[in-house]
Image 1 (spheres, one colour):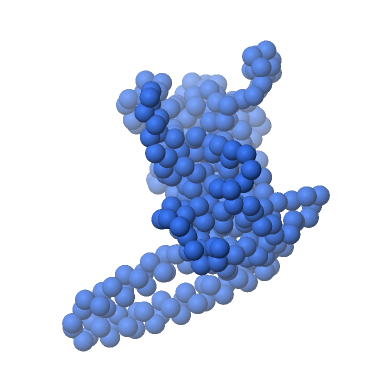
Image 2 (cartoon, helix red, strand yellow):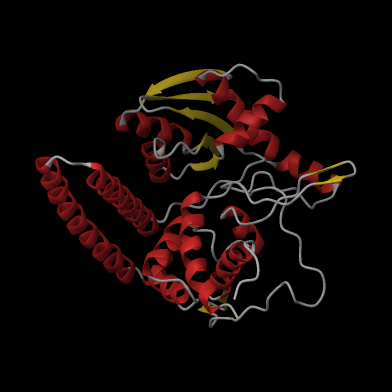
Length: 341
């Protein structure tokens, strides 16, 4: 049995680590599921977690090269970083080559022309992850094979403040993103996998339906009017039907994609992980297989971060990360905790 309330967090962390190990590649094949040793009784001190949350493109990672190597790299680097601030109706761009700001409407034809103009210039477009508003732009950039780097909006704002940019406008943000790309020499993100992207959309839609069902059930419990009760019951029946159809479509989509099917099968071999949690991890944590397990724990918001100052030693707390992944792992850990010796 679990010995204290913090053990559930440990089980969540271990569940994620187990799922990472079972899909680690070796010569193009997948490892069999591994049983991890409890790190509370493992020999030797545990490896420390990263103190900072990795970004979508690891732009905050420190370089391990020497100063002379950095100088050589700076002298040979040819990437130009174009900053793009994305809104629903338009995008604001800043190109350091021309030192000009431009506003373009979010029209597919205009975005296509913009991306085509960058395809032969060897640039990397730097933009913030804006919850889906940037998808039309990313589609145009992908078609014309233009590299792009998405950054965490919170970290972009902190960079702006650190460089003295207290004002916030779309034009200022576009210039700031271009400067951020240059300062950190951001690498272009990996191309979006269409199959994984569709799975992410399906999983997000399923979560939305579950939210609707939860709200309708809450309304049903507080309503006294018979007509409204019947209407809510009818709505619930429809939503549950759509939920079942969507769950079936998710399973069919995973089965149709060979790589996703392998990851899904490997994840489900870990205790506590079922079809729903596995689909959520496959869709929302594409870094699995390319990033070390401790960085992945930080991405999921399960890595305890230090809070020390001077002689004060604060308690370690988890924070940040991807809420969707953390919720899914909580369910898996809750089930796996019943198997904890």
